[in-house]
Image (cartoon, rainbow, N blue to C red):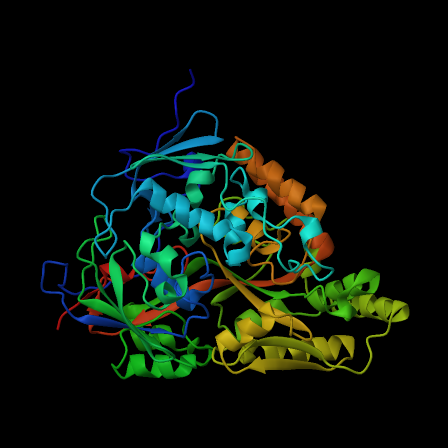
Length: 556
């Protein structure tokens, strides 16, 4: 019998060890070391979450700062992106298709109820069931029976919405079984060697029984099993997280709690940091890119992170459809001088993109077939635009690039538009939405009238996470409506490959398809740029650009 691949007693796990990321910076020099004297409340700049705090619904950064601290999954990721068991005692398989997950004893939710295998089964089934319309439903697609909890094609109307009275064939996935209180069996539709790597993402968190009694109420006052509990949520102002006394994991809280303070612009948050009125900022505003490292000294962080910025192309915008639409996508991409924008606007804290992933992810490449479309080439850009015009004129309407105005995006959209305007001879404008959640709502309701900004912060450290969730047909973050059978098939082939190196090559092939279609136009990779006040110590920003809040120390 082939021995099972185990995630037990090892302290950390990385797929073929090559997914361990480069060491991350940060860290304070004070004396607080979590010895009981660190009881201060750490204040962190944030914003208003778009959705209720339900793990399978939250897929944006403001809400994820809550879910990642209020809930604990089967595994968690440390600062370097290495996977550690958390609720799981072991995760093992003989064939990469049937996975047996054994839970540790002693875990409870903050309401005192036990965390069991059924807690995971019920939560995952809820997240996958199509009528529940959860944003992260896509993450359960690999599990056998996922298609049974989705609407069949003949149950949908011409717009893709379910017809009245229609329900999926099943409410639960056949590939999930709670064998006992502490043993969970997951059967996948095909072998997938990196399945354990995903299990620290919020889609896979457990939920208590009380959630299913009233999901709406739960979303306002979530009950989790993580290092913190949500104590207070004053919408558009403040979320108070406090230590969870019943937390049984390794992410031991070293402070008296965390206050997530909602800001509507990053300059205000940064100025509050400089004035000593805020402890941590996770995004430095563009106005301070050239000065923040000098102003903050060793309290500044500027390090690579698993974050990419793109301009997404909605498939429903007529000007980007068909042959002319593809030519326009290529023309716009080649009209953007990424080197100039990253240097003049971001002072080198961004790196021009060469693919759809991130340099800190194993498998990243700068020589993919088709990525020359990312090179600044104004002559070719103009030729392609004129070719598109000969097929179908654009008209007098400006080219809009939509984003939220409560973050610092106008600083790069304006020069990007200037380059497009000068190169292509068309008007280009920033289509500003006042707040992030308003922008997301417009995006989700297909109200964007041109292009829109897309930022992706990885959920788990793998190439697949930059591709499937964003560009897979029907994926939870496929906000463009892109669909390619060829791309989907290549993702399936890569996911089923047992050799990690062979899987990487397949994911590269999948990216060549994206370069042919350009559902999104990669711009640049983000560094994690942030900082902290003199009042806190032991601040570390992780592989995904988020600070590990539980280990921050602060005296009263």
